[in-house]
Image (cartoon, rainbow, N blue to C red; front, side, top):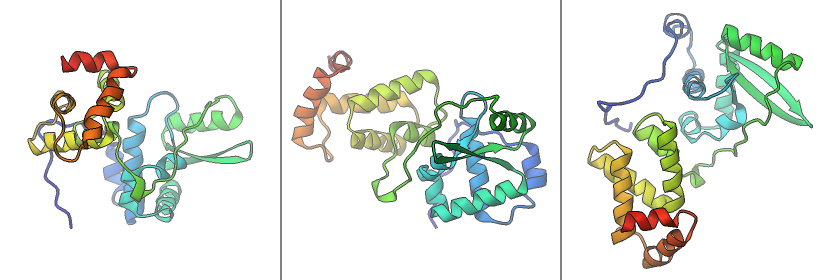
Length: 233
């Protein structure tokens, strides 16, 4: 069993209805159902727009959930049991022969939304697409690293992360998060300064000389070159 280092002083929370604890939790006796249900509450809470839902393709491509469940069969089992219990609503859409399975929380607002979608009163537009999760190829992106280690994204932070992702190699970003966490510095400003220092002075642990010269020149000459030059000067 792997150990958990504990919760930090400052962290974000995902709200759960009181009915989940008083009525649902005592009934749930399947671990796949419990993990799937809790994960969907978390993911849907952070979505924007109306109505809020999640597709099975998104869930299959979610490394955190798939690691917790083990495989796609466990996910389908968890979904089936959650729908059967009445926690989730399931809607299937057929678009040009392509099946899309959508899942909503079973709230009054979402029940009305599902009915309107089924009748054609609401058009969902383009549905989220995501490739199935492959553990051997999975590498958490900068947004995942931020949410899992620091907290919920804000629009301003999201823009800064997007910029950093275009400036620095993924391995640098992961290493910078790791170094900040080892020093108990759970904030983006500290991580950003680590990356800026590596870009100007070099990164000793594993960054080839080619990375230090050729890649830095690529970043300087690229779309965000003016930002890199400003940070290095």
